Image (cartoon, rainbow, N blue to C red; front, side):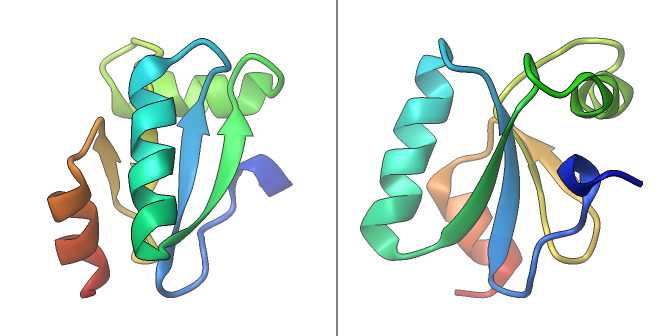
Length: 88
Protein backbone atom coordinates (compact mmCIF):
# COMPACT_ATOMS: atom_id res chain seq x y z
CA UNK A 1 0.00 0.00 0.00
CA UNK A 2 1.37 3.41 -0.92
CA UNK A 3 1.43 6.48 1.30
CA UNK A 4 -1.49 7.95 -0.68
CA UNK A 5 -3.71 5.08 0.45
CA UNK A 6 -2.95 4.96 4.15
CA UNK A 7 -5.65 5.14 6.82
CA UNK A 8 -5.80 8.45 8.70
CA UNK A 9 -5.02 8.96 12.35
CA UNK A 10 -7.83 9.03 14.90
CA UNK A 11 -9.84 12.26 14.66
CA UNK A 12 -8.76 13.06 11.10
CA UNK A 13 -9.55 12.01 7.53
CA UNK A 14 -7.84 11.48 4.22
CA UNK A 15 -9.50 13.55 1.50
CA UNK A 16 -9.11 12.48 -2.11
CA UNK A 17 -9.58 15.55 -4.27
CA UNK A 18 -8.58 17.47 -7.39
CA UNK A 19 -7.39 21.04 -7.77
CA UNK A 20 -10.52 22.08 -9.67
CA UNK A 21 -13.15 20.56 -7.33
CA UNK A 22 -15.38 23.21 -5.77
CA UNK A 23 -16.95 20.71 -3.38
CA UNK A 24 -13.47 19.79 -2.16
CA UNK A 25 -12.57 23.44 -1.52
CA UNK A 26 -15.83 23.98 0.38
CA UNK A 27 -15.36 20.91 2.57
CA UNK A 28 -11.71 21.78 3.30
CA UNK A 29 -12.83 25.22 4.48
CA UNK A 30 -15.50 23.68 6.69
CA UNK A 31 -13.06 21.17 8.18
CA UNK A 32 -10.56 23.97 8.83
CA UNK A 33 -13.26 26.07 10.54
CA UNK A 34 -13.99 23.35 13.10
CA UNK A 35 -10.43 22.09 13.51
CA UNK A 36 -10.77 18.65 11.91
CA UNK A 37 -7.46 17.53 10.47
CA UNK A 38 -7.14 16.05 7.01
CA UNK A 39 -4.50 14.87 4.61
CA UNK A 40 -5.32 15.79 1.04
CA UNK A 41 -4.39 13.47 -1.82
CA UNK A 42 -4.79 14.84 -5.35
CA UNK A 43 -6.01 11.94 -7.50
CA UNK A 44 -4.63 13.62 -10.63
CA UNK A 45 -1.13 13.31 -9.18
CA UNK A 46 -1.50 9.82 -7.65
CA UNK A 47 -2.86 7.18 -10.06
CA UNK A 48 -3.16 4.60 -7.28
CA UNK A 49 -5.37 7.00 -5.33
CA UNK A 50 -7.51 7.59 -8.44
CA UNK A 51 -7.93 3.82 -8.71
CA UNK A 52 -9.05 3.61 -5.09
CA UNK A 53 -11.59 6.41 -5.61
CA UNK A 54 -12.96 4.59 -8.65
CA UNK A 55 -13.17 1.36 -6.65
CA UNK A 56 -15.32 2.87 -3.88
CA UNK A 57 -17.45 4.97 -6.26
CA UNK A 58 -18.68 2.45 -8.81
CA UNK A 59 -15.95 3.22 -11.36
CA UNK A 60 -16.22 7.00 -11.07
CA UNK A 61 -13.53 9.42 -9.93
CA UNK A 62 -15.94 11.29 -7.65
CA UNK A 63 -14.37 13.74 -5.23
CA UNK A 64 -14.22 14.59 -2.46
CA UNK A 65 -13.98 11.03 -1.24
CA UNK A 66 -13.00 10.80 2.42
CA UNK A 67 -11.50 7.87 4.30
CA UNK A 68 -12.06 7.64 8.04
CA UNK A 69 -9.83 6.06 10.71
CA UNK A 70 -11.99 2.91 10.73
CA UNK A 71 -11.21 2.39 7.03
CA UNK A 72 -14.67 3.30 5.74
CA UNK A 73 -15.22 5.97 3.11
CA UNK A 74 -17.81 8.60 2.17
CA UNK A 75 -18.30 10.49 -1.05
CA UNK A 76 -19.04 14.22 -0.84
CA UNK A 77 -20.15 14.02 2.80
CA UNK A 78 -21.58 16.95 4.70
CA UNK A 79 -19.62 18.47 7.57
CA UNK A 80 -22.26 17.05 9.93
CA UNK A 81 -21.65 13.53 8.60
CA UNK A 82 -17.88 13.90 8.96
CA UNK A 83 -18.25 15.12 12.54
CA UNK A 84 -20.64 12.29 13.39
CA UNK A 85 -18.40 9.61 11.91
CA UNK A 86 -15.38 11.01 13.77
CA UNK A 87 -17.34 11.34 17.00
CA UNK A 88 -16.70 15.08 17.39
